[in-house]
Amino acid sequence: MTEKNKPVAEVKQGLITGTIWENKSESGTRHNVTFARLYRAGKQWKRSASFGADDLPNLAAVAELAARRIVELTLAATEN
Image 1 (cartoon, rainbow, N blue to C red):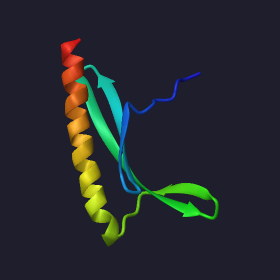
Image 2: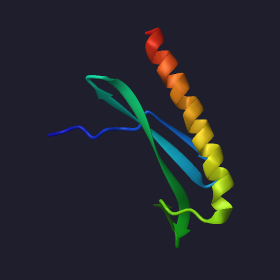
Image 3: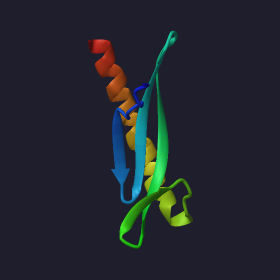
Image 4: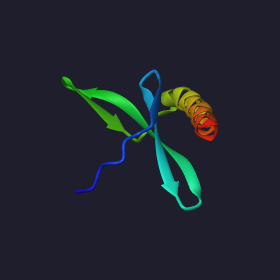
């Protein structure tokens, strides 16, 4: 059985989230980010990878937060 890769961090601004993933390889550790917009469908919360014009300021803020968090994660890894 394979273990699912879990995110190392998540950043949020409004209804926009950025999930940070760590990928280790022979050439080193890399981080990737997936972005999502949360919305309600009835009583259930769902995620979409589609963003409207009104979402773009929050998407830009989440991208900046994710970049800062990746720097923090990288610095913490080099300190160990």
